[in-house]
Length: 428
Ligand SMILES: Cc1cc2nc3c(=O)[nH]c(=O)nc-3n(C[C@H](O)[C@H](O)[C@H](O)COP(=O)(O)OP(=O)(O)OC[C@H]3O[C@@H](n4cnc5c(N)ncnc54)[C@H](O)[C@@H]3O)c2cc1C
Image 1 (cartoon, rainbow, N blue to C red):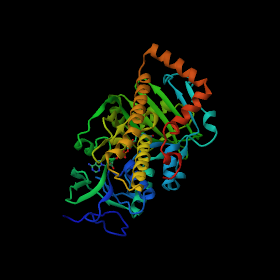
Image 2 (cartoon, rainbow, N blue to C red):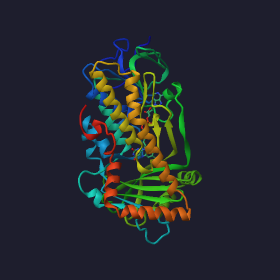
Image 3 (cartoon, protein in one colour):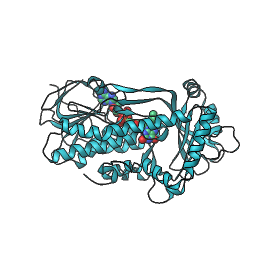
Image 4 (spheres, rainbow, N blue to C red):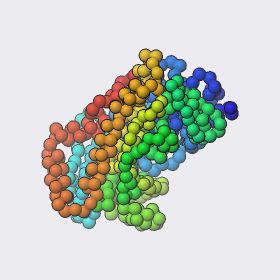
């Protein structure tokens, strides 16, 4: 068997895949897989071993890939990042969201009255969400993974196949290395090859929309206000970043999106200016624009024999409410709690009892969130006059119900339902 390639630096020891089996082998070391590895490293009992496999070369410090997305992290996700000591690296770069304005006025309207606003409900207590640049979050995760002695990284590396038996899992990597473990975790994104190899089917559909993302600098301050503008082709969000900058998430009809991506920067900024209006002053583009296909996808099962799915491998949702990664972080917290408790009792962390507990905790919640996002997108991404009248009336009523608005803010912050301990800021 070829020696394992340990590519992270600095490396205090060389991993020996022939030694005792790993407790968990996580495939996919991005936001979700990386955070899960760190959570195990910091919360699991002594002796717990973690292998982290990723197809991309290891990245840390300045080599982290460019990603122009701004990610809205809920207060619950922030609690998890605090519990694993990752938040201090992000805190100064994170912009709290202080208020939210939702409108569906036409772009050419001289006034854009809000349909629903969250202002006073968000003033008291902790902010319900923070905006963090995706590159900054990835850097914090990768830098910490590189320092963590309990994590052995195998990257760039892919899984060629895996075999499961009653005692464990053997994962064969493309380099010919074989890793032995008790539980295999798929964090390899929405095209998860582990999910496909395990024969787990998905349900869902592709949206007739493309998500365009970019960072914009503006003359005037945003005061922490996020704006969601529902337009017939899809929602257009302006999300506050630190400084006089905002991140945009713009869902657009695919043909128009292609024109916008292929067109000049001046034409792109002119269209953005029409959408921003004048309240933030003159705007300029910072960095590049990028587009993403949008889809809804839920795995029919979140577990199989000695296998658990987390993050986009389990569910991908429309980005209109900035919840995809937050739902993935709920998986991280729920799986870590389930596995760590089982490990402390000296029981089998890959048993069907353990995995069923994780699945019961996460599957319904994820499917429900995906359905809500889908419903909102369908309700708003159209120009149907009767539908518009009904939804405007409904949201007008919500706007006048402070108790309901406070509940919605708590829900978006991730503080309702059966919340795993790490999301409440408690250790395991
Ligand atoms: C436009 C847009 C805006 C968004 N905004 C938000 C937001 O504001 N807030 C929010 O919560 N969510 C948001 N999301 C959702 C969020 O980006 C995703 O939910 C999140 O990135 C999923 O992370 P992940 O780690 O599960 O998967 P990924 O980020 O897809 O990572 C998968 C990892 O697996 C690795 N990999 C893949 N295949 C293999 C293989 N065969 N072997 C080994 N490794 C492999 C890859 O290299 C990668 O590192 C947004 C999404 C989009 C498209």
